[in-house]
Amino acid sequence: MAEAREQLRARATAIGLAGLSDEYLNDLAAGERRLVEVVGKLPRGLPPALEPVHVFRPPSASPGRRS
Image 1: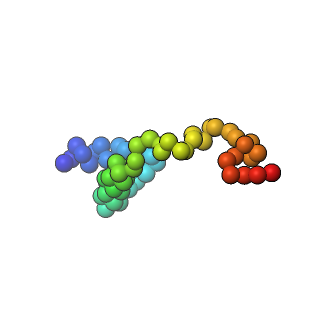
Image 2: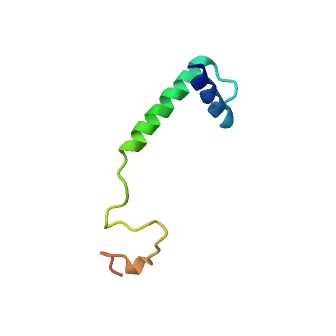
Image 3: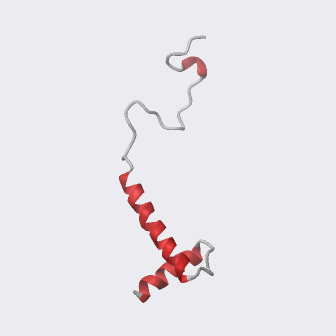
């Protein structure tokens, strides 16, 4: 348990939260667990109809748009 607490304190220090009390360290740990849970539920990849953000289309080439 002490080793996990020290690892958590090291992560908090790495992101600029060096002076957190034990209560706030517990909140940080709970937030990390929740973030991992939420990110784990995100879908992988993109649906086929979506293009990556870096693909540029001029407005005249957009589907459904008439000039």
